[in-house]
Length: 603
Image 1: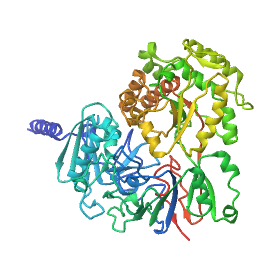
Image 2: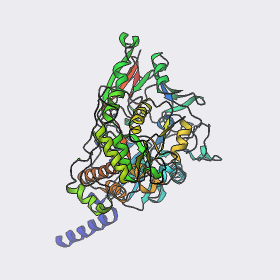
Image 3: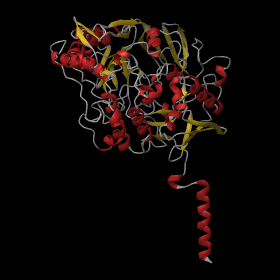
Image 4: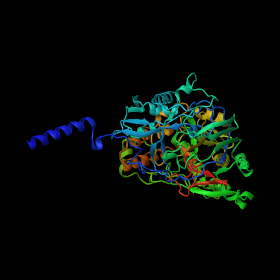
């Protein structure tokens, strides 16, 4: 009898397991999610580790920005919007901790649920979540936001194509099912903006507009002087002010952005006391231009904020769609002609390290010798079509820092141009028909360091008979030119995280290469690059992810798309003595999520 009872119990238990799942096969609502492993913070965490939960509320922070703006719709590719609308007024289902490579915790959503393979994800909204007008954030708002942005905005379209369906599965539940194997998608859905559907009725979200959008964030847009200033005011009725994610965050009553002509004018405004914080990107200016009375008196604090994030890529990017830069040998010649050591000495006093990898300053950076292990295995199927140096190892040229041109590298550049069908004739680089080799460099007006680097570069190019045209355009024109790939060479600056993923396809994936408004400025179309990105987002372990990222790094470097410049291992901030931040610096350092988020004001 006992044996029969035990047998029946086992059968019943198995049936329950089949119906409801158990152990690692079961999905269960959780407070957070990490790309790999578990999020660092427990369900009962009190505050982010780099926030001060006892920080006082009040005060203001005034920033300066270059250019201007002509729209308050950040979801349209038309027009230029001011900084901060999506950061301060629009929220997402989940939010990042900047002290972890890629972990999310519930914001509008109280929980996230997914299966082991992350083929679907389900979010449960917080019942207290509200828009700034007091109306509740609903599942209908979430579904409409995701469908609309995924359909009309290039930034979200690529990811949206990987969604099989989105549905409401409960009063406060939204489930998204995917049509591809991509473990990052569950997290990306948690970071999509949630808009109030009713606010956009009768409006075209694809058009620029000066109408203030309704959001659910901790701030509301208080005042707008079109093109000149935008002011955000902390919402005293913000629904989420007591969440663990927001304790010690959003401390300032007023945050404003004034728009000026360029970086030099912004610095002058800061020294005149018209703004409260200035982020210095020039190492040379940091060392020489801050002998100011306010610094000497202690009214202005100078601080270097360290970080552990990858360098990303910054420098002159060549548009491989353009016939002049379609040949990798020409692109290598352009790299050889750029004397980084001299430029760095002139612009930065020689203090900044060069970007030698898209992921410099991190474990994700590729080794510069021959590819080995998993990295080689990933690249080997594409060996016949890889650019030279991908498998063998590729290193940037080293130049003489004492002279603007390096003769040895210039000779190598001329030899490569000859291989590509260009020779110096009467002092001018020409093809076999006598057509001169020339190209256009498009820069945003007021970009001080890029302009300084380009001016030195022009002198080097003269040594190989090349005289480019340099075109300086204002912010809206620059956006228009880059959105439509109307340049031969321009400046690129892509910041990268410790958990790169689907955004890499937007930066250099084949599908984005010919899509207007995409961020693939180089026009890369490489099956190897696409495959490495797919391997990254599909990786099930940190080792596999790292190998795929290092393989991607090799393919990008050997493609010779960018003439890399420098990066800083710390952010340089000068700010009013009334501003304060916690002693604990997050993993990503001074990134979005640090200033002004966890700063506070005290007299």
